[in-house]
Length: 451
Image 1 (tube, helix red, strand yellow):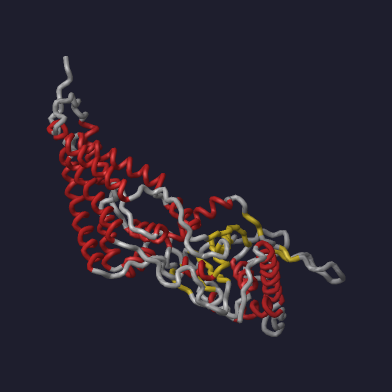
Image 2 (cartoon, rainbow, N blue to C red; image 1 turned 120 degrees about the horizontal axis):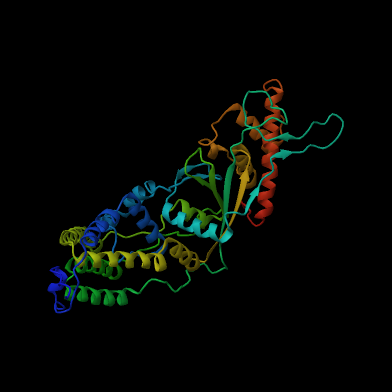
């Protein structure tokens, strides 16, 4: 006995003469609900969009973006500055930045782009290669010498015995040395893995026609919205790099030292050094600019309409509970696969580094405490100010005594501090000095030049 034909809309197209089997009920239910449950935009989508545009230098739309993503692109075109401000602060991996040389602090201006670049750098360097910084200061052996001090936490409690357990909150510092490759700083042409817009338009248009022929009208409508949106973005909009992009605007400083972390009490820290133009552009300045124009306005209006049309098409497909839903699942899987292969964050980051001739050397260090890490950065950078660490280590007479011991070798006043306090201050300063020497040896070409 032959299997009955399905009464689904897919059998009502020009191919209705073909024997299309009945879609199992459970499959139709799952095909109807999966896109509406698993493919919805959230606040991180704006964050991701900002990062992709910053790295690619262009605006692109996937074959099947998350429902709501097109509305986010409309907000981007309506007010790029406001969009970037809000997107970078709500991404989940946003960073706070402290400028070691200038003493300022601010949220990272390109959080998603920086996050993608750092992941590529960490993959190249290997996260397992962590160098432990010294946690012992060994004094010269002589009459009256004492056993080496162990790194401890500052406090008013007496010094613990050498064999007693001591609490340490280890701090991990990832150092990224940024530099331009070669003398020529003009962007280098690279072969992108992205499909050219014209070829993509032709292929997608053919798929839309095929879907209409077989009766998968909902999937065809979704693909039409995204295809037309991508064509509009590719042919009518131009994303610019802002003036001063990747250029150093400080004639007195060749190198930048900017420390970044998720918050002031973090245990993972990221220190960006090297070419100040690269460091400043990544963490502080905007990486792209879309000029206001009537074209941008009307393209933004189209993206709002396209988002609404995508909603109607997806709900229509879900309501049919037919082979149209299966086609939508196939489109979803295809879009995900293409994103992984050609449009992943890592791929965009690698292309950006090659195109802009930027090289980033990454190394990771583990410190026994935060004060030791901050002191090492202060010494290594030769910064003339310590205000950059105010949010991390609150100003306090103990901190001032520690900085004087660290930078000038001044012994803390015995009339003000107890012997235990003096020992801790000198211990932390000594460990910071040793760590700064190691950092300088690992990155010997980083020099802060002043005129």
